[in-house]
Image 1 (spheres, rainbow, N blue to C red):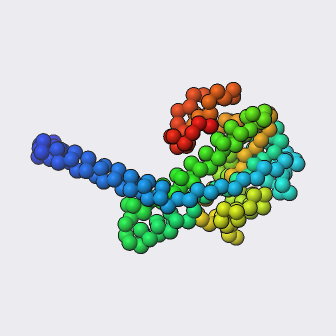
Image 2: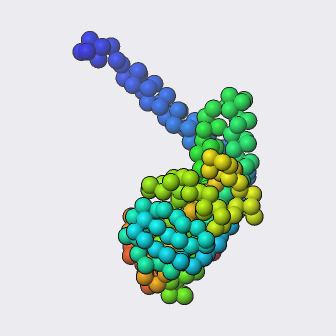
Length: 233
């Protein structure tokens, strides 16, 4: 090892560092291109419906004519009075372009653009969750953090029940027999509502919410999915 070390010159190290900086710059350039492309292609859409809760259990919510089996939901959400079901999507154009980029062997841009589409759908869902929270506060209601089929032990097959509560047709989101959504860059979710609903039990929603003068704020805002300059909630 010492012999190898003796053969490494200062110029070798300088070239390696320059190559690393160049590679980093190329990655940043591709990411910026993907972000700009994604912003042009995305078409954010959202559909939402709130329905009263008919029955609650440790692992059960009955609402809108459906029985939703969500592990530990009674403990996590507490005594909710209603649920809000939502579906959001950024449309099909991003995934169509991603397929075209893969076909053209533009792999770095394809991968980056795919990630941009996923992040955009997630940000749209977070944005909707925040808006619901802020709309509910003046009514004396709290809104829980959202849950989605396929996460936190909630069976993906229950996606069909959620779609019966809140159909995706108005925004062009379809569900196949395997309970996968089209467009793929879509998210379905459920929140609980009520004066005594439990909020921020598994992550601090307050840290990304920029609502001013909120009486229920538990932590300072540090990040947000709200676009700067788009107004104050």
